[in-house]
Image 1: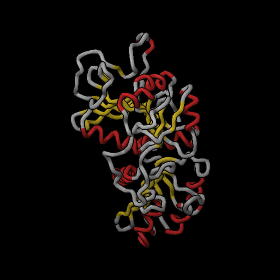
Image 2 (image 1 turned 90 degrees about the vertical axis):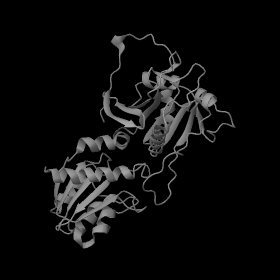
Image 3 (image 1 turned 180 degrees about the horizontal axis):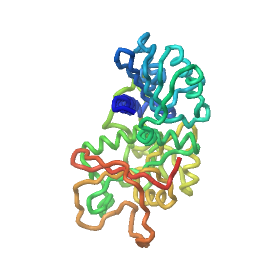
Length: 338
């Protein structure tokens, strides 16, 4: 693979990210078409409010798609759902070669799209930047393979390990830009969950206020469905919400459906501990602030532990980035294999 091919697929990945918050429960996909004369046409799923990424890009390319190379992050579909099959559109357009990032794990596709392209004389190259794409589509992949939601725990923490002070107050540990980034994380999720104690102490609304998607042609509501573990006051800001109680695994089972790819757990410490100890968390998103409480407040899991170093859980750092004056650390559960 040449650097040129990698650059085109990276562009497709970036385009897919631009529609991350408006496609669920369908995957966020990007497509790049490079014509015989070197002209580039791009498309993202539902960029036009209707079609998959390949259809959007083909519409822009028109007749220049003939003989072109196509770069698409996810295997093109070969079945009719809400839209027509992308494979047929690519065949009809006369494209020459299709670079596919990863096979679609959906049982309705799962290699059938690639097979149909090859049966019609179109060369297919599979696996270009597959690692990056698998990370980008991790919630979709888990949902399609296991029929379970991808669970993200988000916490804002001081440098000395506190998520709240001695009075239970947590506003604000991080700065403005980190809070905007966390609202984007909310928009990427189908469900947002907190414990009843967090509702009593913070009275959060759990809406997406400080971030807007780059593309949203149909004004899709990007606010996640709100869930409280326990009971919330009828006048709290989180209302209307779904109130659930019981074993945390049973709660997740109640939230598992075709429309829930990702659940965001925002705390507090007791709920975070319950998820961690049940090994339900796929990704930990920690916002680390350059702030020191200078005393004992509330740690990330709500209190002291009787665990010893032999009991340490170790994940894998997926990414580290500076957001304003804060640091975002994404840690994935390396024990999960989808």
